[in-house]
Length: 310
Image 1 (tube, rainbow, N blue to C red):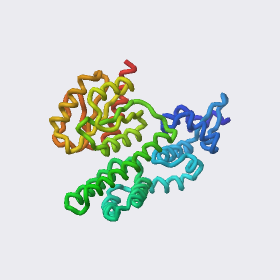
Image 2: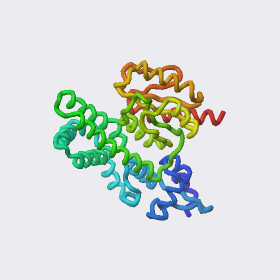
Image 3: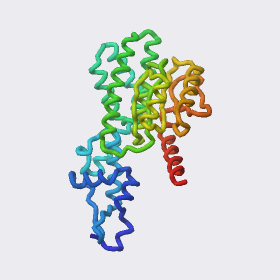
Image 4: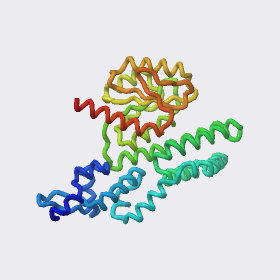
């Protein structure tokens, strides 16, 4: 227990859940399993958390989101956690130039295992968000440019795509299974039948995962009526679709317009990718940067909260 004069400096478990984004059940499990957090108790035996413990919980949440296991980080000092976060947060622009040369060298040597090892190291250094939104596109651009110059063959470009996809999918699965809360919007991922490229879609899924969204992937080249049927079956809030530069804008817009007519107005359609000429129209949104997903999800949740309260 603690005295009344200390209460103003303490936070309830509900307040910590809102502040840190860690569910109450996770806080209780960590307390029981790892001995942290170590809350005080009021006269009703309710948990109360000092500010310094809340600050540590914020650090832990960021590390778990980046792929660290709770058992490996809970209980460490703030100094150790900060060091780990600095390792996670290496700016992508400092990585891409140097590592692109290494990636191209490994492709030239047909070294799939070495390439996968380098990509995993980049993921650990930069974190899932930067790996998906900055490093992935940067490396893909470098590999594509090398192919266009005749420095590598198309099968080597495919090797890069496959290894990058393997590493990114594994990281997404780890983030989804890290014990952090998953809540709406429920997002359905796919591409149209003319779009075989999956990398952009997977990068978008990583960004939605970091925002705690509920995600369902249909993979690529799903017929438009089937996307609509899946949206109804899964009660999707958002349909996330990716378009590469290989898809003509008019074709993409025609497909989006067809899809819009097949799904309820309450289901939002978000499109992104490198398709030139793709512009937002009534009925769907277009995102040019993966970094725009996070604020857009926040806006969606704000609109949903207003709708629920009205």
